[in-house]
Image 1: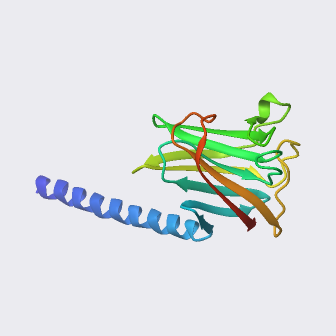
Image 2: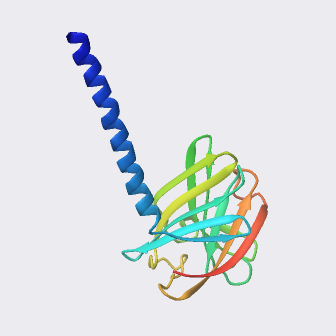
Image 3: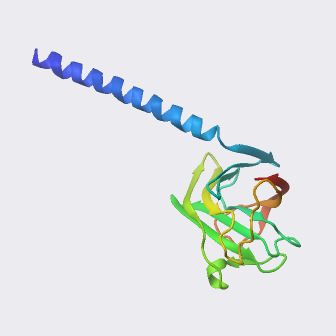
Length: 178
């Protein structure tokens, strides 16, 4: 009888765990369905605007860094650049500013602020994905403003290693209405 009760508890535990897993999948899938997706030149950008914040995810087939530049002028000049990678299982994502056409620096080194929240990264099957949340208007002059319901110019970039200052190997441009 004791063995039967233990077996019954184990089986019930498995059923409960399966139901919980299925429930989490339903929640995740419904959350993901709230995102808009943009695919351009093999970059996948998923985003959602909520409470004056941009919640975003960017993926590209590389084991290096990926980046998005919002509102660039000439090349990367004056852009708010979010760049990140997954280095040895650790998330590294930084808030940068385009100081020149081909040069960018962390906001915090040039009188700006790091306005990233809720960051994460993943590198799986040769694809790097970064996720982040930023305010549409952080008040930081190094970020610029992303205007909801207006067209925003973005540039997607990717590098082949985790050194943020190594040259990009892929680039794509798109105008997006957030």
